[in-house]
Image: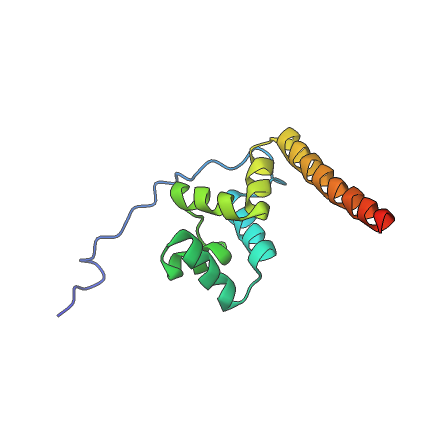
Length: 126
């Protein structure tokens, strides 16, 4: 026989809440990571499986990351940073490290430019 409603212990509402971000336009961590994962891997069930293989995390946890219900733990975040350019850029953005984002993009542009110049040289040499 179950207890009556009066006998059950309910949590009291203390009125305490987590502090809100000072900037209301600033995206929260969980939503930002979810968007980065969706941009990098897509939204299909196969995307979840790819991330599960990379992180060796529980599939349910990874589905929650994609759905923005929860964020990855520190260990899983580090693994995601190794494999996902979108997650890396998102974390740098959330950390306010815009200088590192710019430096990363410049290095990538420089590499692409080198490849293009090599292609031009190869075409001219033929």
